[in-house]
Image 1: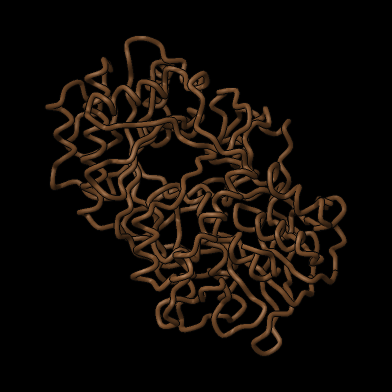
Image 2: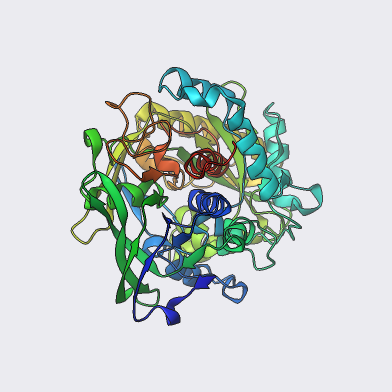
Length: 503
């Protein structure tokens, strides 16, 4: 059963066998497995439920209601970087592009060898991915929903000698409406509120929306439950308080939320909680063609490639509502209106790189996360070089011009490879990347060594009893691919261990 705001205005106080904080990729899997194991499970989601009628193309309104900080949450540090994290039932799976990729073998081996995650050698990890892909109906994006915007990215990569492929996505009957960022009104996207949480509810789990967890309650070193506030999503007003008492607590509030909840609860083994924040380094270019592409037709992200020469470098097609996308590439006011004239001819080529970033997450006085992220200039140059490659490919495929974002000394509308060479300037750095930090990890690392990670190999917060983490914060380093499938697979292993289910 799903409890929504109107039923929670007086607050609540309940008992359960297990409480799961967060209903995104990791939390939904944990809740479903624990409920299937016979536990009385309570799921707590800080945001509201998103209904199909709310999934309109009014992206600013959607972001304001269903994203943390209205979609304007910032990573500080090297440069202010926006990080769009979902605050709704299903978390960011509601508003991402549903890309599902298995953790690359070389990253998995690195986690085993360098970080001590020896249990990932076992075939149980592979079976976890298989279960996740089956439950979310993951399959390659069909050609009939690619649309010309995705296919010109295919052609651009091919022109530069990069083999590419339809991206595997958690979608069933995609209509190619390019509306992933506002939730998929057709219902085709298999976000976890549609694909996984129903299994939890079928086995008796109770789901509470608009329930913002502030602290984990402890009796000595043992978790005993959580306390928090019922929050009206319209205006973010507190309307009541709640308490859930449970001997099993699973934190799946994301790489920003989980460390803050732990720190606010005075849980910080080895002072590792909130350290080691990392993110994929990202960039992208807009290509504008002579012929109309009708970019709102086709899967939001239907095509991609792994660079064969640079480990950890990935290319993707991309689309989002122009009101969101052009803030990065087109500015505001008059520059926005000028770019808007070309929008029917536009495509976006995105670049994602597994560089070596570093940072931290700390709670502000009001309990919100303060994030800092630092990016090496050399890693920014890898992304800039890849942006040049994507730009050259688009120009070779007949693009009228390519727009790389606002960079000093760089032509805004590039029409030749001589123009794109400016992206290789040593004067450029991470602050010049048109970057959105949506793939964030590592703030509560799982390691084999208690000196380097707050979470042990069972997903348990070290030094505690009854407290586990099941989200991207436990990654020991970036995944090199979109993290959703890996989050779900790791949560599957951890929660099956808690519930005694066969892995």
